[in-house]
Amino acid sequence: MRPDAILIAGPTASGKSALAVRLAKHWGGVVVNADALQVYDGLRILTARPRDDEMEEVPHHLYGHVPPDRPYSVGEWRTDVEALISRLPADTIPVFCGGTGLYFRALVEGLDDLPSVPDTIRAYWRERSEHDPIPLLHRELERRDPAAALKIRPTDRQRVVRALELVESTNRPLAELQRKRGAGLYDPNRAKAIVLTPPREALRDRIAQRFHAMLCDGAMDEALAFANRFDGSAPLAEKAIGLRELLAAGHGGTALDQAVELSIIRSRQYAKRQETWFRNQFGPEWTRYADPLDVPID
Image (cartoon, rainbow, N blue to C red):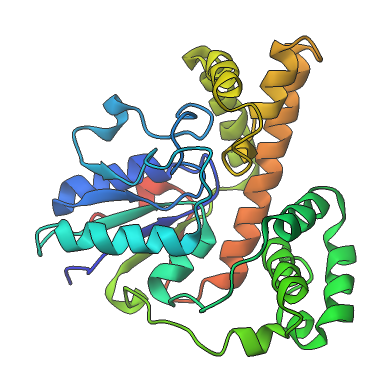
């Protein structure tokens, strides 16, 4: 069966981009970014956006198209996706590739009609999420919205923090806010939905190898140039792993080898959170593969 779309999710450094190109070439499709950091201009290396030679002349869309100092939501991304799809020839298969679970949820389930969260509240909870253990945040959610806490796993950091943001900014329970949901763009049963699940040790090695390759590709120069352009005015883009660590080394605050090790550790922690999200949130319509080379073309 010819799929309506191909969805490729997986943790960082799992081989998603190369697989997307392989499948897009076979189906005559295009690759569409589904990673919340790769949308931003200015950090091609540190966000691991595909290089021109890695694209192999396959059209790639929604990469680096957002100014780093502009907020960009999952709702805006889906709007951009809809506009893109409307411009493509009818027989073109979009191959969505990325590690942001909420983007894939927006494709197949739709979006809740949720109110915007003030920047101050969002910044407060995102800062706490960086430092507080997730069980502590989940207990806070239990206190503020017991029904939401029952539905959200205590290990699901992203959803716990999102719920806390919404409850604090609206003083309304999450269930009330989620009553209205728009339709998804694609039925996952009519799409080819793939999750890459590489063995943990192999992924740890790939993450380390890739960060060292980023350094050779000019990641330090990119980090310094980015800081000179934006100087703290791009808080979402600045979440790119390795940016603050390399800046600390570039400005003499820490040794480069220490910055590299910290960046690799943070990348491995991020990959673990992604794996947890995909394991808990994606159903049986998603097929899991340990190696991208095991994914069949048809």
